[in-house]
Length: 188
Image 1 (tube, rainbow, N blue to C red):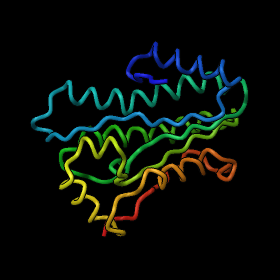
Image 2: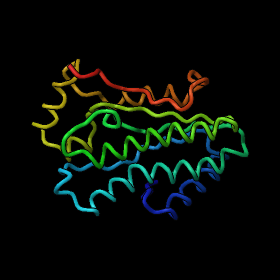
Image 3: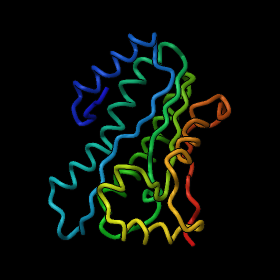
Image 4: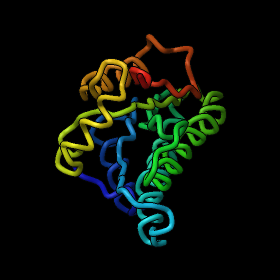
């Protein structure tokens, strides 16, 4: 089921429906995000706000809704999708980088609050991951330019990022909370 995370009523409906259908929410993966390319000097308030609302505030809304159901159960895992741009600078990405840095901070702060309830919250921070939406929205030239900067000379495959998310959602990471794990080959 699709959910527009910028709409609180849709978030509540999705979380409630998932809770009812599955008898509780064990794991939430926050993967909604939006990115565009625009220089700060040319960026309007609407473009800034839309990226922040979907990427950061949407993660907050989903996290808050899930935590309300996880608290009484005394367990749960939340994995957020951040980005290495939360740490690195890149031209025309101020809004996206600010949102992803916010996701990192939200992860760390909410993890401290949730730990007493037995809930873990971590994040992944991929560098470039070549997925279908990115292939449609970015030029081949840009993808090649970004990929060649990676140590392996390519972007990550979606499954390479998903494997780290699965690890964070599993009991193999049972002592980790508030961590942001880089899924990156570093820059060459």
